[in-house]
Length: 496
View 1 (cartoon, rainbow, N blue to C red):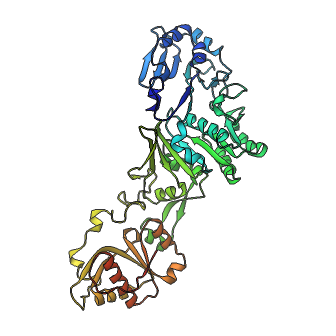
View 2 (view 1 turned 180 degrees about the vertical axis):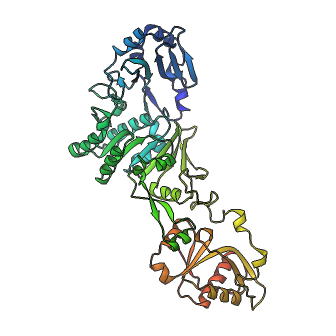
View 3 (view 1 turned 120 degrees about the vertical axis):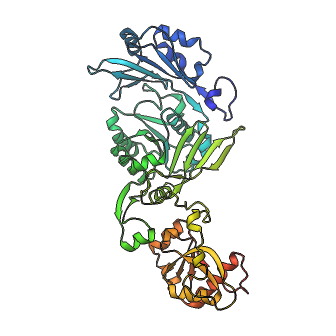
């Protein structure tokens, strides 16, 4: 990992780390500072924890250590409080012109009984892995567990877009964590401008104010967590301003299941389907669907400093997840030479999948030949004919496909199969079919069924007319595609 090599060797991505650790050590009790200064791995320090009545601890990448056997006293806590800025309503404070964050734990009387000193670092070069996305102009949402580097990547995006892309960038810095404490922003944000927030409950108002008053091209927001902030984010996106932010959540599934923040990815609503539509989908009548276009076009799940999972079409991914399909984001990682390597993550079933959908339901992105074995098994009893008819000419040929008819008569299919001696299995539900056969008239109407089939990757064949001859020629064409000898070629039905 890149951050394990900060102090020891040149990392794969050229990075510059600006830690200001000395300024943080100055506000800590003397015995704590002395214990830290002699450590060779000081560059990998994450947090210093001071809890009343307990020994002081330091948290490093490799684990936690006790800095001193003597317990922390109220004088130690007061020593720190007197040397930092005032705590806000979110119990956070900072050190002026640094990125360090000091958070307080209070008792019922409002007295500070614990302090967490989190080391803030400006790491230049961290967005190389998603730099093309940042320059695309699309709205980007960063997700990840605490401490994985969301804010660090957000800060670097602000600098790169302001300095290299020459865009007007505004940072809504609620806790002064992106641009540091004090009135003068930290140099790590480059030429980006920073708007401070009086209290966290006013973050949504400052977001709107930034758009109305300062004509930004890009707005950077950290830690969106309320419905008001989600609504403000949608307003900003609808005004044509590029929006880059972070939200509470580890994966896209977490947002889908989060009623407060689901609006960021379009929202989820309950829809009652008609009998025919429910039958076509092969699901219950009450289903979940996306409510509106997503605020963010791209979701990036930060897995580590050198690996992210990217959902580049959030609308499509959310629709697939709600319909029970497996989702497979593109995983980007940094190679040994600093190049970005892209791989397809193994499909995973969304946590928000309705229970009525099968866990084995194939993904639209997967090959249409990858179906559950039991549903692909050809019935020996039905291999003579779908309709019980016998072929009139020669030996029967069987194609291992399941066909769903839409606007095509089943009796005509059976007659065509009997005429040409080519047989398919029938599917009574669209979700069980491997191909759809319809007519040009039905296809042009833009039926919901056709849209669902195309969205799921199921091939749709279109006949000019609903006649036995047309269906028979379709069967011959399909058989030739599968390598069967069925005689000379004829005009092929249209595939969509």
